[in-house]
Image (cartoon, rainbow, N blue to C red; front, side, top):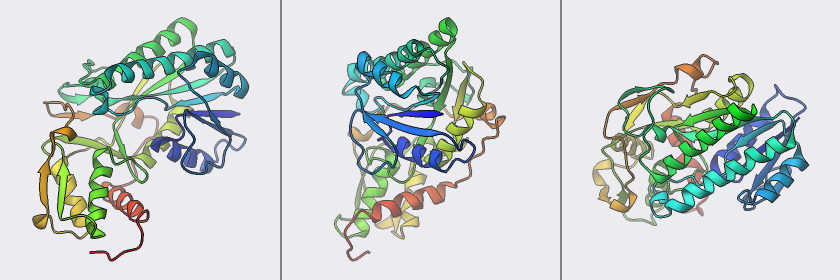
Length: 319
């Protein structure tokens, strides 16, 4: 059985590949990766460099691989950056998804597709957020994801494509780009530990609460959904626990043995992104019924993230 991962060079893709390679429930599976750029690391699996915004190229690679499962991760992934490039965010995500769905339809063989969306489609919704909660995106990125969902549901209803939609929370862990909050904090902390940065941090909005899920737990959930989810359904994926970003930063500083009282905090408006103005909690009751349960603590995630960044720096005196 051929399994295709789009956007395999990215943060989630690299962890998903590792999870699939270790997965013994599908011993005869063959994992194949695609992306528009070559990966910065060895994948140990077949890799094809493909521009999925090109319909002909997309159909060609789908026909060649004949996948029976597709983990569709490719696309524009930054909510903050989508305000600088709104057209690119919307067009790229919608075009890639349309090309993948149409290519699978033309392939004419059974194929289950896991479509990556985001809990950001709920916007300012209040209280406990379940899959039936009304959507109200706050960014071009979230809007593009909701458009992807609607397109996927159209292909499910009209053509019977086997599609699962997962609305995921903030996924964090080793290997994440420092344009995201936890990895951005971690890089600055490591630089202070290495003595190459003054005891000062640049941050965005610390007075918001967010749900964070270890990416290694997340990819296990994707494997679970691929095996057990009902076709055409939407599933929330989160830890189910919110934490104030200021508290998160405090925790990271203590884990790194830095005194929070000695760190100067500078707030940068450039690091802000639109946030829900209401208290909300993501319900994961639906995916829990399939057997999902987060296993990795936030403390371990933050430690592993910081330790992995530390390994990328030259050996130096550590504070």
